[in-house]
Length: 341
Image 1 (tube, rainbow, N blue to C red):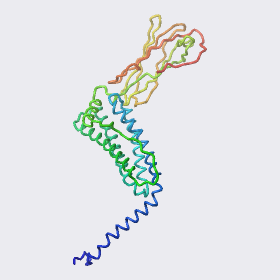
Image 2 (tube, rainbow, N blue to C red):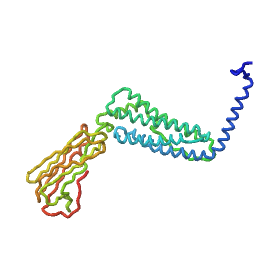
Image 3 (spheres, helix red, strand yellow):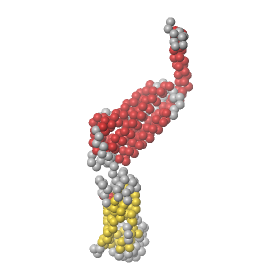
Image 4 (cartoon, rainbow, N blue to C red):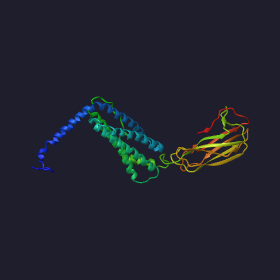
């Protein structure tokens, strides 16, 4: 007879394994009987999280289809919103205590799908932005391909989750789960990766980092108003102070720039001035004020505001403004206004 390490015959232990299995099975059955009534509620919780992820997946999938026209802020925003929903759903799974045994496969598949979606969306955005910012490395093709494969794996795992829930031993009917797909059906991962990278790297790609300065508003002191004919009019004055609000509508820090104004009168007179515009963070704005310009009551003028372009700036229509105004000989009694864009 063969003995174990403690000198006890192993034959005496043959009955232990069946006993342990029976005990575990009985415990599982008992737990299932206690937990099963909550299964429909848990299924609804899973469904509500899946609906939130599905909405973000729909937006992300649509964004992939038009990546050539998607700008950097939109891509990052869509990705961040998807990641928030994915993280919320994974936290919900992690915080569950003693979920019903019949839900083990459903929850495991859901967590794996969420993990794949999270890795795929975050990685794809990171690597496409790197390509847009000048990374020409050949390794990016493999990385983007892997990101797309992660998304496809998440879609496949979710389909398996739906099937697992349909087969789960839930005592009450539950609402069907929504369709969740981050990739279009049959998306060609290899060619798709190459297309996405080409779109990100093309000159002038909206994914590129760039500043986009714009003239947001022009105001004056004294403050001009619109008369009944729609003409800008100033109260009688011999000095005009021009203020220009400059904003960075791009997604990158702007460089030091300048804005100029030129006031030309109908008599051929002209005055010009230039003021420095500091570097602006994306979305920031500043107001620059010019020294007083000389005007004459009773005369009409044109005011041209010209903002220097940022390097590589493609949108130029909002970098200049031409306004016509008249200096009144008396007091104007109409509502004040500002010339803004």
